[in-house]
Length: 432
Picture 1 (cartoon, rainbow, N blue to C red):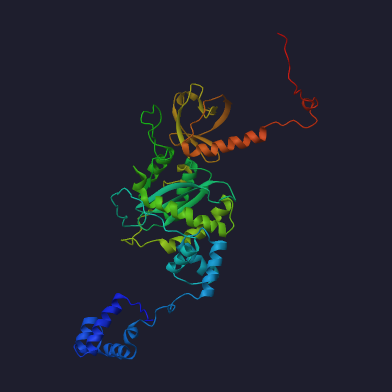
Picture 2: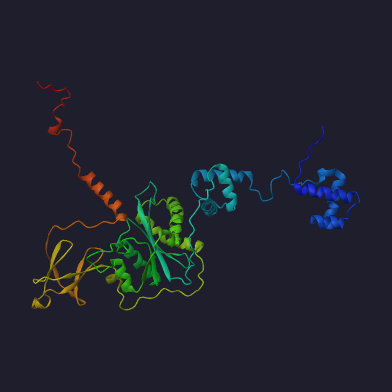
């Protein structure tokens, strides 16, 4: 029975050329030029052809493991670790953790192939996407800070759902300041930016969505100054507030949300963190490591962050400020509570005057008239209207109401008089 030889197209081309050299119909130099080989290599192929025929031109590496192939025992150990601890990790993050925690250094492509063959990873199908015009990064760090929040089950089933709010530098991709909080409120964003300014300085501009914290979305509002409390604070600090028309316009921070929802969730799991307080304590370590790995160098090395000026008092700027008009008896109302200005002088100068009310995060109220603080006292209260709640705070509010309802729900004891009498389950007939 004749032997069947399997050859590649490259080997078949070599066979035809080497056979002509063996028949003296082609010189070794001409054969080397046709095959892209040296004359010495052509002589080696000719020698193997004369000894073994066409079989001698087949590659000796066929069927043998590669020189850089992962040993079978190591591959089995990697598969066991991936299945036990990193089953939902991506190839890149799994590769990092294998090297960082288990001292197993392999390439990303090798880990991806192992995960695919083990059924732990599958390539995502590409979707047809709408094309958007690319925007170049800003040239200097601090020129533009993107700001956003990401509500997500960050602690999975170990803890409560919360939001991660943070700033992202447009030029470098660095996370500037971040915080876990219950929901995206004005106070939480003010606290976030206060920490950013204390750590890095004042950026030139902030880039945000059209959330009600940043912008007044009611065009026909009859009262107010036309800007939000956060917008007023940015104006006092000299920081321009820019609003994105679409999520794709601030694509860098939107993509960062997806990255953090993958990597940060798994880091919190490995650190066994299940509360926002523990997560906030861990965030500086994570941010430093993340920025060192993924941040890019800006085109211009100069930093555009600015120092605070002498008139910038962050404690006074990051408050809720509203205007009120005093009555003839020097009274004003704020959040359904009536306050009265206490003064030893005649009050006619302050009658009908416009004053500024300042409320800090703890709820302390201060009143100012032309920059001078007034002494006030709480006079009384009256029932007011319900406050508006934006969409991002609605879930947190409903959760709190549900908890209060469970606590306040009355359940009578087993010995209660209502439960002493047996239930009458027999049908009742009424005479016609």
